[in-house]
Length: 285
Image (cartoon, rainbow, N blue to C red):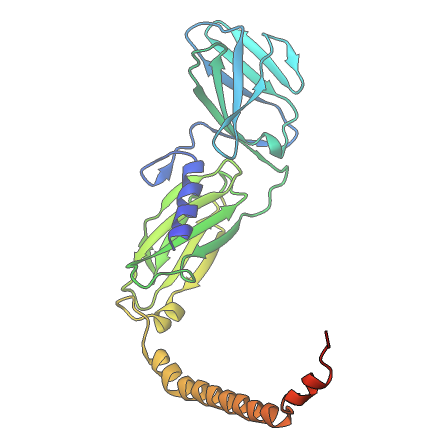
């Protein structure tokens, strides 16, 4: 369970920073694959040597462009105008999705968050919604159950993820990952014996709904309300399994004893040489 929660938290740390339980989408750009996008770096003065970075999966930064103003560098073109330096990314692909920063080249760099770019397909399909739960790896002494709802290939055409439990609305914590997956975390009390948990998203224009469901009743049957496993199954193992194990051990010991006696009977006694035989072949000096 601890490993599962650590994985969920690390996923949230890699996601975009949220305000409360609603993600801040003001600095997020959804761009179709193949188009161009401009990312601006607002500075006090024009930087002819502005360095641009993209956040890596491990949280580090990788340099993407260091060209001068109006000088193309591969697919990147830098534009400078008074207090704004802009990097144009041409013919964007899925690999261009990510979080971008800018900084002035030098020893003492200050990194400025610019934009988060999410590249989508020309005709994006409906998001795929699924629920991940910590039920299978749940500890006995835990009082909570964690659910993570993931909407893959989410776009702004859809509302944010909503939760219900037994037809009652629940509040979850939402983040948006640079790969375009919208995620929502829900924590409920373990004392709930039965719960029909559901997460869903709704399309803004058509009110089309995509949902994913999870029933908590199967877990409640295996683990009681206090979170401790029932001891009935253990008693069955002791009363039925233990005599069988003892019987097998006794049979094994009896077989060993029988084989030992048979081995002793079949082994001939060691040959002995009479004392007189030595005097008969003794060397005379």
